[in-house]
Image (cartoon, rainbow, N blue to C red):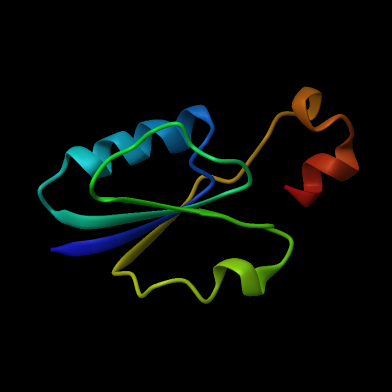
Length: 87
């Protein structure tokens, strides 16, 4: 069984991906690295609330077989192009 990392699991894309991974028999652990806590709870789910601008916060997580990046935001949600670029 595989371990997965998901960066950015609180948006629409990340949430859908995490639900798919949790429902799959192929994955034993799903580690999500997010800017804000998830409301979702599952035996295979491990939530890591991190500062994405500090790579050391998330680059030292548990070993994974596969990693997915769902990081992103809209200009409206970010408030400015500079803030959107940081995400």
